[in-house]
Image (cartoon, rainbow, N blue to C red):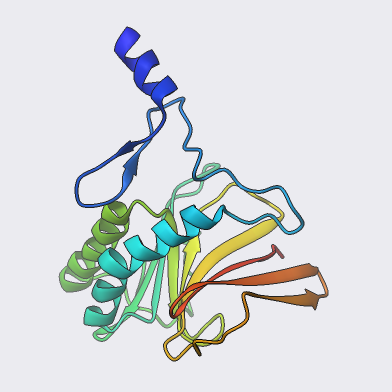
Length: 197
């Protein structure tokens, strides 16, 4: 018991090959959100997250020709819902709470199950809590949406090839729901926080 308390008090543990382990009941000071308006992650967390996404997840997404990945966990009595569109077609869990009878996606086949698992494993190894990846759906490039418990905000990273070297540090846009903030993290990577609809 003393070891668990000690590790919890010590904070996160850096893992070989990248990533961070936080003891249950502990917290990672690099992940605490700045409670500004809108709230953003600390700069170092943004840098760490995009490095992990670029190293672990982006290559897999590119290799599979991924255009949509959704991994919604089961909650409040509804089952999990997975959607996967890649170079071999579009697939969706066929539970009635996840799919309508007229949804065009097919049920997962063995090949798509394996590809979905490979993407999920890459996300897990990255240590970045991504539940959705979408190419072109949320602006140019590929977006990596973060799982969160906020009812007010959405957070995601975007990989936008060709981002100019002199891109602004941040772009604020007023929307009908509030301020959308895009922060240039580094290179072709952006962090976005926007009001949840």
